[in-house]
Image (cartoon, rainbow, N blue to C red; front, side):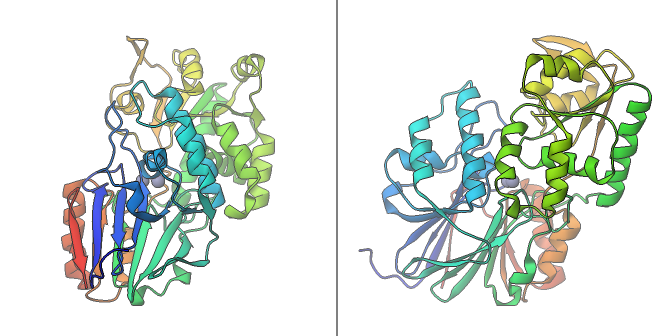
Length: 432
Ligand SMILES: [Zn+2]
Ligand SMILES: [Zn+2]
């Protein structure tokens, strides 16, 4: 049993001044340690991990959602010990899919194995939105829909008599696939500390409906010219969102679904309770042609239509198969639908109009465009969220580029009288 202490310690293991490798360690006054997310950073070629921790000291883990920048380091914990992992059923399944895919495809050494991922899966304690669970003598967890990707959640923690909200990645913008984050089930004025993402600290998103309409009209234009529109999209969330948008606007041309997006879609079909409009998603998925054979792939290229396939930043996956076959024709298009990290092939294509196929750089003649279908709150929504907090609340900004987070922190503290802070990796805060 650990020594009694009167303060709460919060240690930032990663995700500080960067979008990646999130990890926050909370130690309660009675010495119970809870880990919030434990992800990798994939912006460098080599995966980067958060600061290490001793698994034997942990009493529980909360995982907000499946993205690898939140889940990718978790199996490390399970190389030595089974710690209860509180998360939604869907997040557990998506995490397994993404982590195993990373293990298979990584050209770099990853310090855990498939067996550790299995141990992690066996340690899952499924939680539902709205559910309150006592996870340690002086820690209570309430899980709230974060509106970011299917299954994503915020954690509202009662640590002793101190209330901490860990937003993780959240979206206040309603999309076709998901409702916005469920702030209605939170009494934000009661929260003492908020640990908030700040990915888009300095960037506004365009109005969602406008973005959808522009996307649809751009695709129709390609179809009318007899072209093919390739939409490289992340397998979890974005692919299904794109299919839902096409369905919502009664798109009349063939739609092909390929790559890991098929597996993710199949998982989601078993968990329709996590989406906004079950019928819309079911229709969208049944109207798409799921690639099963090589023949299906060739067929997708024979006539005008849309192809939705990972990888979202063209780093690999079936999207490359199609890209190689459509880039020379001006009638075709490559429509990117997620943020393109600098240094990725997708970003390079956007900036230069060129693509490297096996080290040979080619000019892409097909149209290239980017559409802002973000699953994160933009600057406006982050401000809106902060405005709902009580004055004097401690607001910690993580998961954002350092300068941008700092600027937003200063602005928020002036606007709403908040005690804002942008921590550095490895830093520890104490509150009484
Ligand atoms: Zn995320
Ligand atoms: Zn993230």
